[in-house]
Length: 355
Image 1 (cartoon, rainbow, N blue to C red):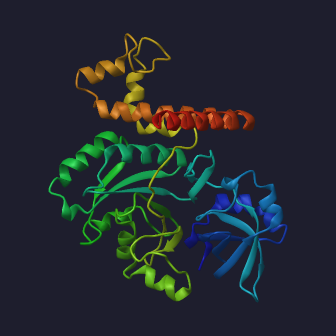
Image 2 (cartoon, rainbow, N blue to C red):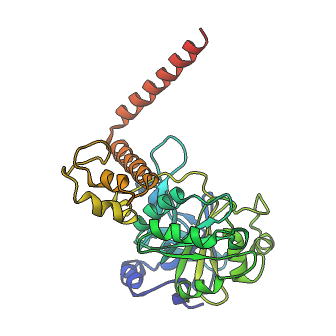
């Protein structure tokens, strides 16, 4: 397989020049399983591990390889193994705050050209969640696209598509049915040879069904033959880059129960371009769009030009970004102090309820 088919381009080639001088080879990560990776390159698959030096020098988990990354590696052809020595700079990356109380970055996918946000048109349909995904998708550096799946199960497909288009300025929105294989031809305009897309969404929205439809077979059975066991037969439990027979690649991801923000507010501004434009007419430059006089955003809500729920979603995300920024600038001692303060409050509340 030619490197171009894996997404290798002149920009990567230029950045890789120093590594070639060290006798290293470019490989692309196609699967991550704990501390072991599966990569492709040099015409074959490689089982990879990260060198101790690389792991030690990494500033955090976000600096370690993720699915979609290009890495510089030394290879052991006879054993089919490779050691990852460095990460090739990413052209795009989808990040979120890792689940749990710690402020830690988690890289979901790297070096993708498109971020497909999958939402079911059944009970999963949630415009506020789509807005959240769009904020991080714009932040990633890739182009977001919304896929409304299960169109065959929804009698209001067209009205819901129009609703999503109204909250996703500048974003293509398509209604499809993976189960019925209808509307999927639209994906051909995005997923072409050498291009990578990541599929994101909650569990059960049909990401794996979409990929199986594009492949023409059930991918899970193939992975079992290759020795990559899945814990569930109907849900993805790992991230994997999948090569499609017609060219192009898709990164499949597990369903996300929570999507906590990461990064700055640039993606938020793009996802809520309408509110940002209105904010330019507010009386005060630092208007919080809540109860300040002369707030053009609140005026738009009162005049029916802006949905109250959309503003509420925007303000919620803005507060989350502010909280993330505060956490990242706090000293470790301050974070620990805040944690114990919260624990003390919880204990006090429990004791009081037991009186």
